[in-house]
Length: 359
Image (cartoon, rainbow, N blue to C red; front, side, top):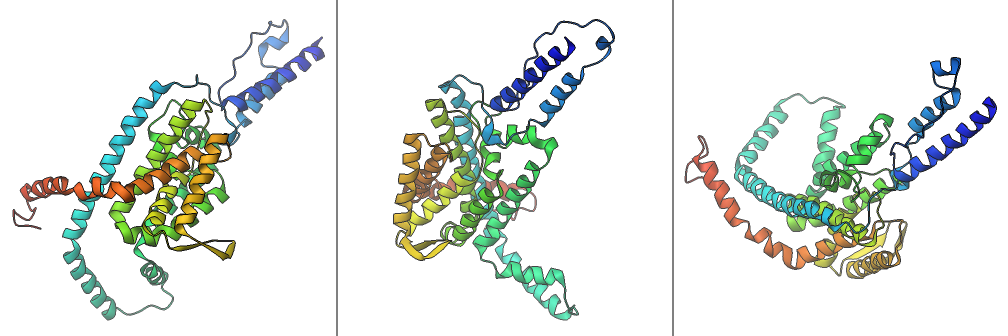
């Protein structure tokens, strides 16, 4: 009889592990079991110990989890929508103030750099100075490449955090975007810097690095960062809306939505630019044709229900990049003057702010 009970517990343990992987790390409900007489009441049986071990080891990748939420709960999209609008406004407002401060300190920075160069000439030079080599490499980069270096570093740190077993639950909750999750708003931004697969991160960061010089030269680093951060949130909201409408719920992560905005913006601004695939450099095509092909592919994936990529996030990011080049730059960035004027007056009133005549 005891052997028969152990067999029953083994299959119960296997079923618990299966349902836990399907529901995304949710603790399985325990069924009441008849109490056993004798010395077995003093502690858990070997089968129960194995069950606890399997529950601790059931840490499948985020792609395999299945959320539990009724489909088409559109009321849950109100909070993400408010967050998207508010975060986008704050991003561009902060970028406008940052640009104002950068322009104001440019003259002082010029004199500081001239003084640093003069001291560098007087200072004895060291052979094999690692810091000097890093500075030479850093100065050889374009402004766009220097700007996206910080973004790439953040993605690398988050990727390493995915490899820490004790952080799996927190990473799943805050660094994957899912309309069925308890945390709705913060993952909209944090998931933009999150990659579970090394190939996924490497591909996204390569595309971002390739287009960084063009997009930053077009918009400037302040406006670019505002566009990139906003694009991550907007593309995630598009994913939320599509998943809620279709009932195909599940977690998503990656910078693809924001990068699609950057790619679409460059291709819209420079449609005749020549592009090539990294593994097939002999085949070139125009940026305009590449953008049309990408939109067609993501549209087909959205209609046909392909699940390998988050096509709604890709399509939302691409449409946002096109809209920003056609209209968004005029609507948002060129109307920043009232905010900058308010900030200038605020800075002028503060002690040491430069007075009313400061620029």
